[in-house]
Image 1 (tube, rainbow, N blue to C red):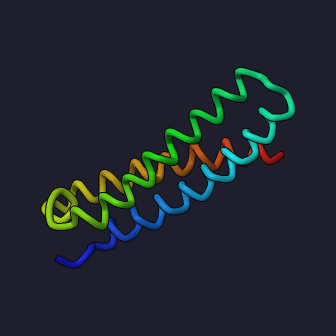
Image 2 (image 1 turned 30 degrees about the vertical axis):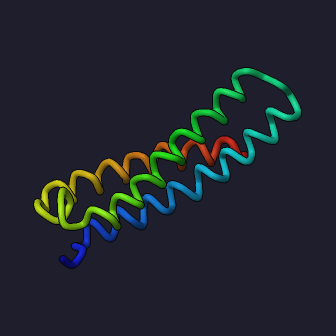
Image 3 (image 1 turned 135 degrees about the vertical axis):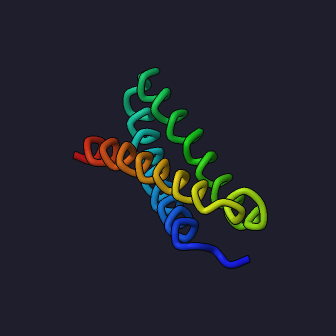
Length: 99
């Protein structure tokens, strides 16, 4: 079954989220090496968990297209909305981290 526009947009946003999370993890890991702060270590863990979640989501998009996302267009739009919200949150974190 062909992917709809919301599904393709969801895949794209999940990829962008993954790149931003990898940047955050790299910056925070470098900061942890410098400062040895448990708060920064917590941020590294946070970014690692979200990065794994996004990579699993990408794999799910490609492996399960004939199930959940392909069956109901509403589900694709809801998932897209959640990915947009996640992108906003990660973008804020990336902006303030790199500033």
